[in-house]
Image 1 (cartoon, one colour):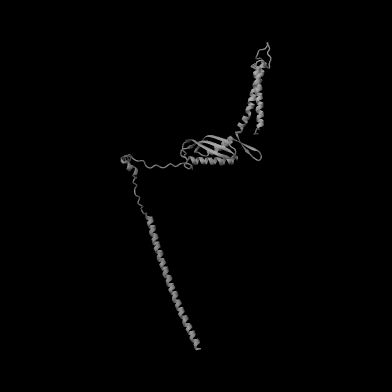
Image 2 (cartoon, helix red, strand yellow):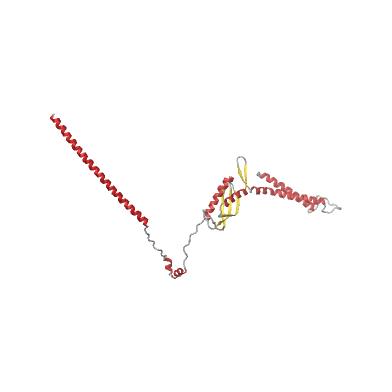
Length: 289
């Protein structure tokens, strides 16, 4: 839609005002409201409201209506412009209707079973749009979590689908509806399970207690004595037996190593003695020579 310049609006308004004044002048003159001023001369043979005067009055009424419409025309252009969001691009302007954007927002809201739209308004801004939502939310969901989720989803979906930036998503919770039946809903608030109700006799005994006993008393709880389980005992005994067997095996291995070491030392000593004897014999033979 082409934007109307200020000078064009002024010319249109001035022309409409002139046409409006001319129409009013024709009606006033034809009706004889101004003395000694008439566009239609009176004759004795014709009546005052003859066909000439009726034509002049009709023309004046038409000019009045046309002038009034021409004066309101710039306002109608501004009003129609609000029905579209203008996106400026390299190849020209892109106009996206507000209804299309509302359908995108409704699609996001319909994906949340815990939220119901009551009223919606999309307002154009300088660099994007503002979305105002009035919703009803289920009783058993977290309002901050559900509202934050729908705000983020609307911003991302509208931006990805239309290219229009959503500046703010204002959410007003104006009521509640029934509970969400799906247990897999991530925003469901789990209610605490109440303990067993007190019997009539317990309530009477509670009333008989003194005030300080009611305040500082504590309910008696049964002592819980841990009972050792037979499988655990058997497993412990098996572990002890295994440790003993491992120790015995280690002792046997140490004894074997010690025995082997003693045998090696004995053999080494014998070899040393033999070497000494051989050396002595060699020395004797050399001395005799």
